[in-house]
Image (cartoon, rainbow, N blue to C red; front, side, top):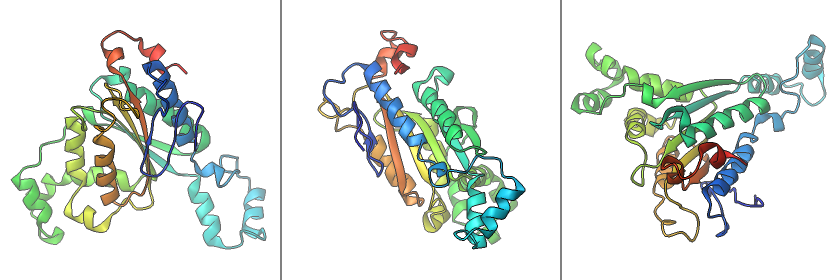
Length: 272
């Protein structure tokens, strides 16, 4: 799907500026936000336009007895879609002023507008105490669940909580800055908690979709000197693909170092 000033490719590719003329960060941020609108619009309300309307008993009778929806499984599926859940994950250490957080916030607003009745759960990784994986954690993970000691279950308690948070959601929006060509350290600690022998085997996130919003200080647009150094997106595709996610989309807001250095105002940078 081509945009006037950018490109959005939904399957395992990045959403970023495709024109060499888009050199100013404010323009690239505008491109990212347009991509963001399309990302959040990939909602179930496009499949079922009546989602979000007040369901009167008359409407329910019409659904249950209509010629096209007599199958109770279909009806159940339609109603279940009304209660879709989005998991928002933030990991930037810059708090509310972080560009990735501003964009995940906008994604949530647009997603809620498209998914009336949907729920949003937020996980701020910078406010979560995530320990480094050690020998005891590895040993507990490789022990059969039925034979783990109380201490081992306590060690894995946070891991189980974070995995359950993912499996309980239907869709994810994940914001993260690029640090040293990869994820921030807190995000890597989180990944270490959710990638386990059992999740790799069971692929529990199959059927979910994920939108990754990456803020990067340098420019990674096609033709830039660092265009081949975006190692973060391929790493994310590998990690989440291993857990079962196949529907992935990447929104990249690069060139953010001008905002952090004070050369570009954050509001101007995010303005469309």
